[in-house]
Image (cartoon, rainbow, N blue to C red; front, top):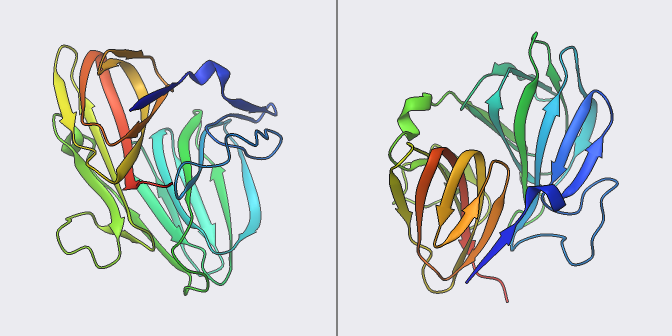
Length: 236
């Protein structure tokens, strides 16, 4: 089963310095029928103007991924980490028992990144941080494993999260196709970050999304299709 999510009907947060599309209820956007998808709690598609950003703020008991689409994201946190990431690179932070951090665009161009929050399988983990500077071409024409659950020895994903979830990215060149299996007892959330595609007969444009339940998909790219998929256990 597939459900199409039109980005033009998503929640929005527009504050001048920040323009966000909310895939799920967040901040000023609240929809009781759209709180989360399985253990996926937040995907915010954030556009941050140069010289601005999110000042230091706290998090607790959440697995957080930041996937940079364009521009440069500068991170600082109470664990002493300070790093800048660019297109196609990903940072991970397990907030656990508590951490504070900031996210800024210190560059000269607009920063676009996906802010992703995943509910952990338990509370009280020790806070942790990592960043991974994937080469963008490593996802062209194939699925790049980005994150998986702690203890999953079958996956080559470098990011290990405290949840049964697998995160992949790909770029399907125009006219090409790429398949992905969502088996029995599993579900997935797909974001078409950039480009145009048709997935199992459903047409998508940039920023659109799909909820996929127990159905294998094939992505046919109209324009180069930059895709992120989060695959997880099916929720009742």
